[in-house]
Length: 397
Image (cartoon, rainbow, N blue to C red):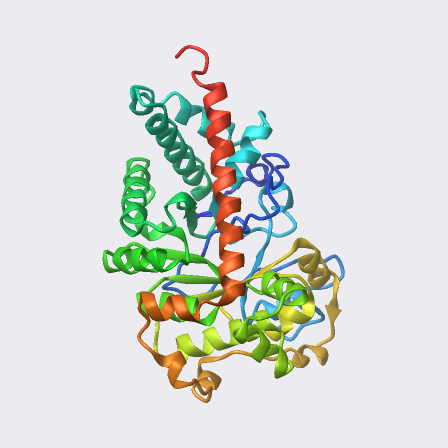
């Protein structure tokens, strides 16, 4: 779901725009990120028979209360049907989200898409491809702007995955989106731009971050991607824990994954651990996000990482699990800047990454999962454009 950094709505009714579901299983969770320059916000879950009491020492706490003291726990949801149970602190404006909006004509954000489709700057283009791209950009920004008024997180806006191997194309697209956000008065400090972690995407991140434009690297499945993104200065680096585990169950031949399994580690958890320690040991500014976290044990193993994207099933289980004051001490931070100082890296892992070393180190798991993720994003973008072409021009245009 798409969410941004403006003040939370004052009326609960604003949190009930309708039930919109994800249109693609391959899409990443739509979320936005809290102010990266401030202490991380914490989600507080209420319960009929428990209260959040870690700081006060009163009564009982939920597990969600307790784990939120170590990491920012973000619900993995695409739309607003779960706002009241788990008020999201962050989300992404994406092609998947636009597909959801287009599938439900009465959704709150339909007007944002309709406004894009009647924008005079777009429909004057004679070239249908240019016109559709304009509609797409306007729709993303209009929805992102609406969401910026609803939630206390940053809006992460998906960059067209068809540009994943075009550094300057990515930079141009981000500048286009940023200009549109400026026109609707969403300031740049409220924004992140979600870029696939190809080498070209990482180079684009480096250029954009040098301009003060904050980037969110996605589809990270290997240490070289995480380390190169950190060296580029990416603001957020997203690792998919569950997807790496799935790959390892059904494939072999990836040295990084086999090394983790040989040492008795889950490959997804091991990558988050290594990336976190690398970022903190060597003073990189990046924040690390663990996504596709599918069970509580994974979440407990990652406490201390900046962001954890948890499924609604896991979130509900955490919220329903009540702990006594004595039990709260069983929750411990697993990742910390202090412990990162003792982590040992090999000489091969401490290189200054370039395109050649990056390509050699990527490995089959990252190659396959990155390709699958890009294909999913590209297919979603094409479906949005197909729908736009069918409903344009709207009435009265």
